[in-house]
Length: 227
Image 1 (tube, helix red, strand yellow):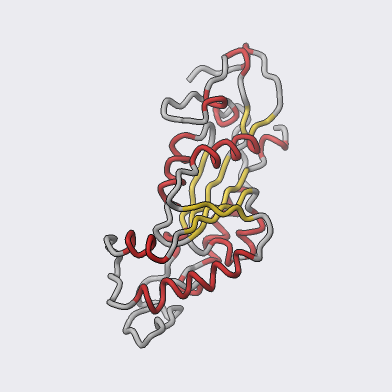
Image 2 (image 1 turned 90 degrees about the vertical axis):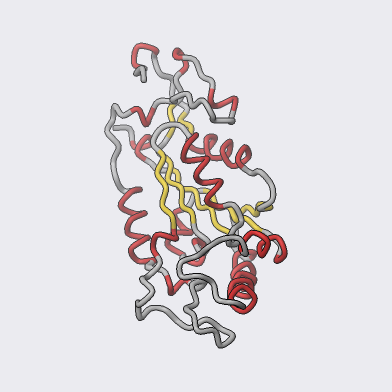
């Protein structure tokens, strides 16, 4: 198998809580062509009774869920590396553009059978503290960070139910101060694209991913699979 076709494109989508990360990654997962996988950092929180947790600031009787030590990042990194080191079957549809009815990257989503477009497999990473982990940051070919103002974030956060539930004062004493510290670190990182969480970044992000994933390789129509 051609090495270039087995190379995964890894896209990190991070940012403020309730900033639209999951909405964006879900739409990308549903509309990008070929092999697309998603790993969500929220799936790696340690159980509530884990000794890895530290108390929330402000004297709250609650864990601090907004620090990277609350997450099993060793396991997440292993899962990511397992995927990007995996091989795709040579004749998988992964390498062929498949028309997706609700994909909006118009110039990419319409290709003729005689002009099949090949794409590398794509791995999406969704997580509010992705770029606090050097190993994950380093494997990302594209890095996006969604932002909101304090007022915008609170307006979204207050209507959302968490398990365990946020105690009164958790946003003011923990969520927002932790985010501000995190943002300062991210602003010093090279290669991170910042996006307004109130906007609709799908078109821009989708096009950038496809430009990077596209393989410039002519394919004879006889070799194209029908799906």
